[in-house]
Amino acid sequence: KNEVEQSPQNLTAQEGEFITINCSYSVGISALHWLQQHPGGGIVSLFMLSSGKKKHGRLIATINIQEKHSSLHITASHPRDSAVYICAVRETSGSRLTFGEGTQLTVNP
Amino acid sequence: DGGITQSPKYLFRKEGQNVTLSCEQNLNHDAMYWYRQDPGQGLRLIYYSQIVNDFQKGDIAEGYSVSREKKESFPLTVTSAQKNPTAFYLCASSAYYTGELFFGEGSRLTVL
Image (cartoon, rainbow over all chains, first blue to last red; front, top):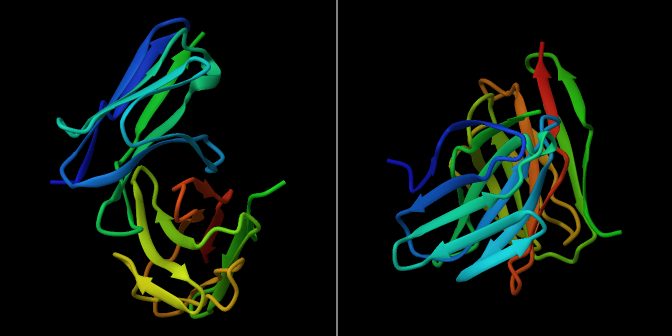
């Protein structure tokens, strides 16, 4: 069993739909990152969370430390949101990051 | 602008040759990482370094080597001992206190 589990693995939506991607982890963490990887391969960090909720434009990320669960929400989805979204946790024991396998999101016009 | 630069973006190598991928950052980050990504799979840690002149093996270090002679630079050498080196390689760096995380654009290595 992976230490970081994402769901769903694949998600197809119509433009304008509200999207949720989930991440569950089994280790103690100091922070959780949501990352976005576009088809060219480069990765950008969307959020870093240690508690609560963060919002940036149409993206919202939440984390529940007690339940070891985080969600990434996209409101009013757009085809340009199509990408792989990756959850990564920084363990309390050090600098290492553990990654989920990613969620492939496709938003159709 | 601050960031991470990886080079080359694409690289072709014959079997039996060593190849070195460059990773440079001007973010003053302490920690640097090398990851490998295979099609449809998640990122796997090859090596990481938290300070200059020190580095640790990750989960798939066999067939790879690194150095950290300068804070800004963390080159990865893919040696001929790596049995299946064709992959996408990503370098990342993070700040110790803030935890901010940056990735390079990646290097795609193909062994012919």
